[in-house]
Image 1 (cartoon, rainbow, N blue to C red):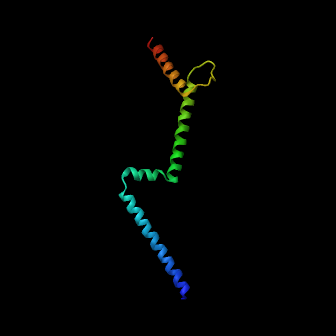
Image 2 (cartoon, one colour):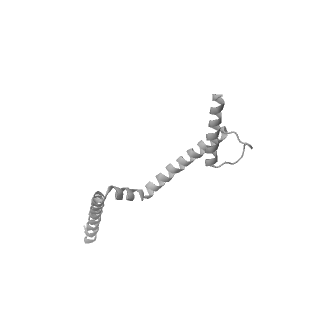
Image 3 (cartoon, rainbow, N blue to C red):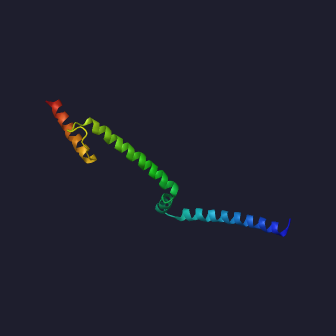
Length: 105
């Protein structure tokens, strides 16, 4: 082996060792952090934010579908009148109270 080859091997070994040492330091740093700080760091990662955004999109879509289904059940004039979510909820409460009244009489 030439001197150049020896230097390259030595550099490779040194860089591998420094990576291992750095990972150990990071692990030790994480172990010394409070639960809140570990949570904050984990939530700051791109992987976590992407997964959270995906879950939120699914949740909002399910929420909107539920309101659309509820809206189909409520009588309004005109039938295609645009209502906000709070208006849909208020109308649903009134409609349920009316149906309850009809059943009682």
